[in-house]
View (cartoon, rainbow, N blue to C red):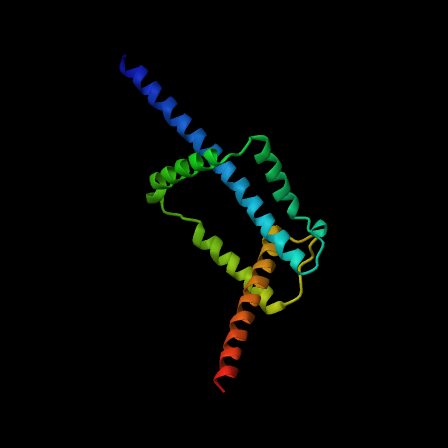
Length: 158
């Protein structure tokens, strides 16, 4: 095999790895959308809100349908995890990790709902806003449980 053929094969392998990583990333994002939609659905139901009113759940429903059509399997999930972990190792030195900025934005939205109170417009607000509200409800409930436990411990000590 001559040098040109070897370069062509290496380029082909590289493009195949890139395509496989892109597909794994896409499926991972679909799984994330389903997980977030399930969480939102659980929280709104627990607050007596009809999930049918929550427009952003459509994204999770579409993602679930796309995963079902693949079909998504535990083996595919495992293979995707391995592929993405390997790709992350390859890209670790690139800098520009978006996760800290994304986490800061999530904290900002959660704090907004904790400070503001109330509820989003479930028919119009973004998935980020609705998710932030749900996480704020979760945080407030955890804080109340913790405060209740402290109050109960104080009362039993008296």
